[in-house]
Length: 372
Image 1 (tube, rainbow, N blue to C red):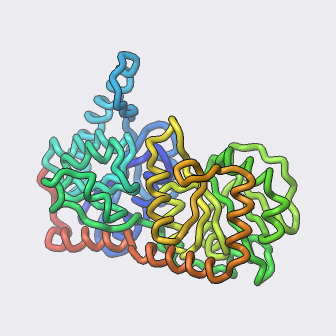
Image 2 (tube, one colour):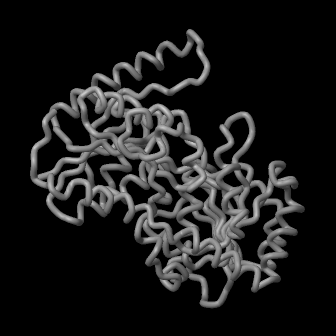
Image 3 (tube, rainbow, N blue to C red):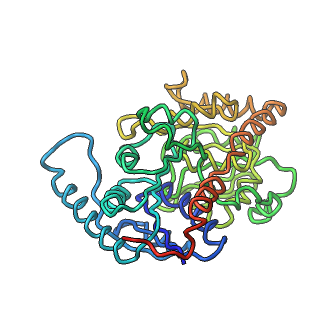
């Protein structure tokens, strides 16, 4: 039996794509898959809910700048390295696949120290700090966008494979009628799906509050408000707030005529897999490295989305949102063109490409034990 280790975490975007790949590989036959993630936070619950073994390690945040106050985080990184090395040495996988996030660095360093092959995947247009570190030791570097290869040194180029971002197969086969049945919305009623992630997005929630009267002129608004946010707008025939969508999410997304949300990699690629047009309000400012703005530009350039914010020459305010939503709602041809552009991006199936690359790589080694 082939053993495969996965790592990544800190946010759902660093876990769910990896779980999609792991589930695809596991269905193909004789293998055991386990996950190395943070011993604090959401990682363990998400991975085990996905049906995989989980090993927790200390996880320290990576810092681009030096400060003595970050010494405790550096110690956690070191402790994570030794914990991950012990796990890998005991469990003897033939490969470590990294989906990124700061927790992935110690396992990748540990795998390299043991001579274990490392693969890594970058969801965003430009690689984050964890991917930049992990790529130094990676045998294979998967990217979501063709343009991402240019961010790596010339000596890395023969290791880069364009895969797209892995998305659960359910998003490609979802049933819009099932989504409408869950929402209790009649057929033919156009839906605007508002997404802000599991914790919600304060900026987007406030914009919905300020523009709801206008939005409901065009759509029934289905709003994921966030698990940790108290929401006081009452449900109505034209407004349906939900704290969080779980297994029903692919079907709800398939039922949407338009999606309003951030531009994290997960949201973008789930919408693309479903062929949904988007209005994007990227997270920006001092609290982010700008990855959402970069991601949004790719989808805007392709014609799949409209983005609001200073980086796109407009304010992400109530008036611009009203104008943008109205313009799309009134132009069916434009909606269809945006949906087609989104679907073209979504044809790049990251789950299948990464999993089949592994199956090809490991074909002769199936059932063999590893040497570490």
